[in-house]
Image 1 (spheres, helix red, strand yellow):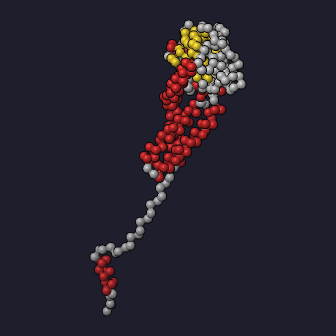
Image 2 (spheres, helix red, strand yellow; image 1 turned 30 degrees about the horizontal axis):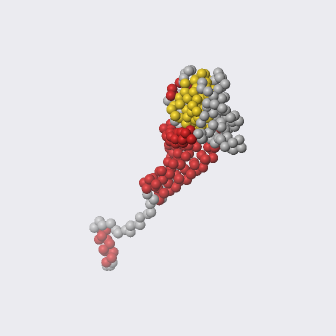
Image 3 (cartoon, rainbow, N blue to C red; image 1 turned 60 degrees about the horizontal axis):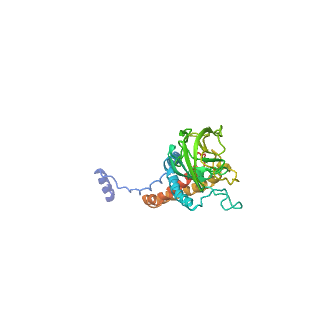
Length: 314
């Protein structure tokens, strides 16, 4: 007679009754680490940032640069009018004497009024480099001041920073306009037209040449309007300094704009990296609110110096 163990009987009865045998549940495994952004996703993000940067520069040039120019014009006009009233407006290339430095660039030297093309009380600054012309029309340093005996040159932008000379070629022969300096108000009459390749004919010894880019889209040359002085010419002290290379027509001011552009670009890149890290480790919206003004200010400085690499008359 076979003896059956009691534990074996219990197990057999359990299996016979259809209940599953007890098993040990394995511990849950740790979730796999999140995969970083792939090369394609990173390339797409970089491309998007570049497109946004280019679009922002376009908006700055054609939508916001005039704000900077208008603000500068307002401040300069008030100061220059005060100088005219006090008789301290500069009229010589060396205001403090022949042994002093020449007239500083961006110094207001005249007020231009050409109502036929919508220019009223526009301040003309000394110098015609690209940064100079962001403030308004510029007087070529090597030429006489408007109203003085001799030939004077004034350059102006055609498309950006208020585009003061955008409609320059709408002037007609016989149109009159005025320029006010520390020596009084001079009256000019439009006489001839030309280009940088074929300059406007010289009809008189005392005249003013207005010049801007030939096109508001990828300009490659300049156009000119020559006007004869019909009021009494003022004394010309002479000895005007030679024109710097960056002040010639259609010049690009790489010397003064490239280094600041690189520095501001590096500052912008560091700010973007800092904002990205802070957004991941801190509050995303808090970071955006804190860093957005900083990034916008740095972008403005980058765009401002990037514009200096465009032709000065543009």
